[in-house]
Amino acid sequence: MAYVYTLENKDVALEMLNAGMAWHYTKYDQSEKYHNAEIKARNNKVGLWVYPRRIAQWDFR
Image 1 (tube, rainbow, N blue to C red):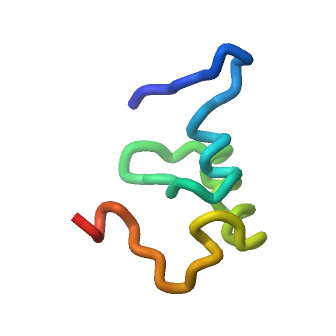
Image 2: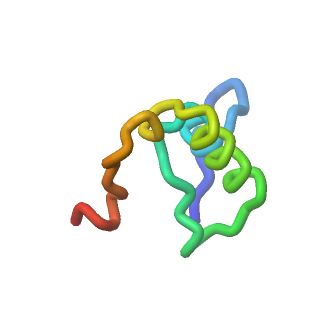
């Protein structure tokens, strides 16, 4: 697992999850902050959560 931060010290994965632009892949990470960010994005229907027929990248391959 790698963590990526911007020059402003923002967690890139967390920002992507908040924007609804990523899934929290729990096979490799069980972080509560990432889980909560995905749930919040899902509930607010932002990013990929707008689409009812979205396909996870692990299912697409």
